[in-house]
Amino acid sequence: MTYMNDWFFLPFFIFGWLPIIVYTKIRSIPEYFEKRFSPATRFLATILLLLYMIGYVGIGFLFSRVNIQDYAAVARFVYELVKKEKPQALHKVNIQYRPLRYDPNLHDKPFAQAVTSEQIQKTVKEVRELADSSSEMKAFLRNQTNITAVLGGNSHPPHEFSRCYYSQSFRIVRANGDLRPCFIRVSEPDFLTGNIFQDPLESIALNTLYVGACRKPYCDLHGCRQCQVNYTFEQGIKGSLLPSTSPEVIADRMY
Ligand code: SF4
Image 1 (cartoon, rainbow, N blue to C red):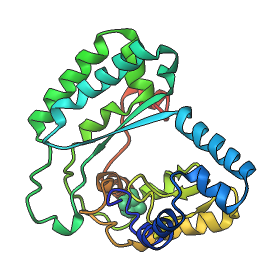
Image 2: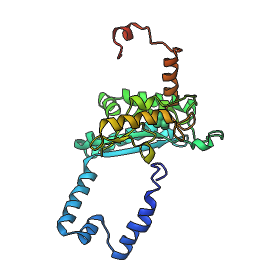
Image 3: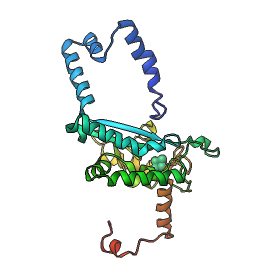
Image 4: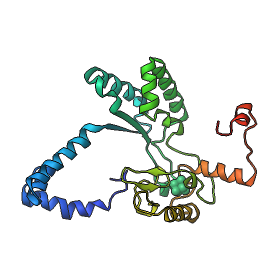
């Protein structure tokens, strides 16, 4: 819950779901739906839960100094395990690596769990070796993981910026259609810029402009893990950064 920043669920759980479980003596969600509605609703709830559970498997690996040595090994383990036990389901597996993020309130304190640059270099070497072990493994790592996340480390060098440019050109669309300005603010209520199924594009555009300009709490050099991107935008707008002059970029601006 801390990671998801979803503490507002806690009262619903303690005062809603927990008393229901204790006083009605139910043991499963489908059972609750039968008591509350009907056997047909229970059947439907069971089907939906099964679909949710057997559809796709997402595996999260939260990395820091203490477990970075397992970074590449986890991908190898999952790949080999699924390939051996259930090869037909391999395409359903996805591994997402996430850095342990330090509390922006403590930015002036040492972040002891941060990975070191030596650890990053060692891990990159291990990932390269793993990718080179077979073409299937390379495709798995590229298409079903974000294994390059280690390059960002989990302590970021702060950069000053005056507003959020990143959110003006990037969106996260969640499964229910909710739009978020960045991967950092995927669950905070303040950062919902609209819903693509329900809201007019004009109000989504206005909310997006607002998030970009208002500098909400922690949208700063310590709280924003994209601060270097915002800084780069800012330097480009000021004219301190110029486009690449390499032949490939001149030939294709989207290179
Ligand atoms: S955390 Fe950074 S990228 Fe996300 S909305 Fe705030 S300033 Fe923009």
